[in-house]
Length: 302
Image 1: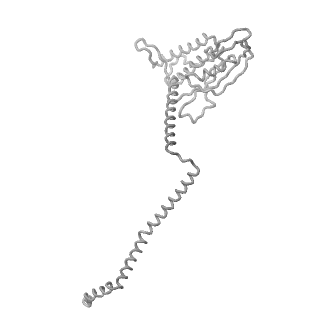
Image 2 (image 1 turned 120 degrees about the horizontal axis):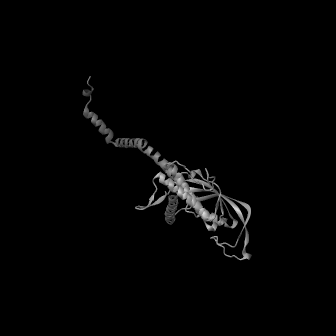
Image 3 (image 1 turned 90 degrees about the horizontal axis):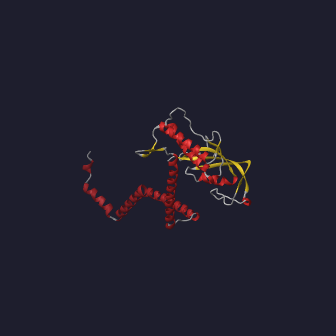
């Protein structure tokens, strides 16, 4: 049976117009709109509201934390920030000055022998055999300097590398070159009249430094050594002063003093070791002491 034929379309249209055209139709429309709003609230607005509540709670917690922080800490204004920036700039400048100073000290330790060439002037010794000859001559010059200043040197007190007939390689030369500059500096200190040293008993390089911090290995390595000299007791301050002001960067680890039982008559001395008064009444008995200094040289990795 054909249903569409049994239904009058015009009658169906009239029924719907009667339903929605009257007062009851108005409320049905309102109800439909309200129903749609409930659906929108459940589907879209409710999740957004939950997200808003979470964000609001997070901001509230952050505000509380900041309020508690301000109660405990001082707030820094623009003037304080500006001053700190200036301090940081000044610190960087001073750091660069220190690096430049240390680099200058390190350049001396890493220098090579220079000799006079008739045509080129001063040139660096680059031939290993020529370097060996120059090394022997300079070691001899150090020994002669001690002798010229009437300083007694114990046997083996001046350590130097003896290759005999062998010709060294550059790998062997490099550490000996550094040690020579240290020897040269120490001989210069010992030969200074202000120190009053009469005997160099020991000058030896050691394997390790007791006070060296291995955490500094990325910046420098130590060259440990021991110096033992005999001098009047009132000259020790000048000896330590000369060591610390040397162009070679020394670090003094330990100083041991032992009396020899001998005495040295001296007048009043100035910081250069010169006698200020020579009168008999001003002469004092000054003990001679053995001073052993453990130190190390800073070899910077620059």
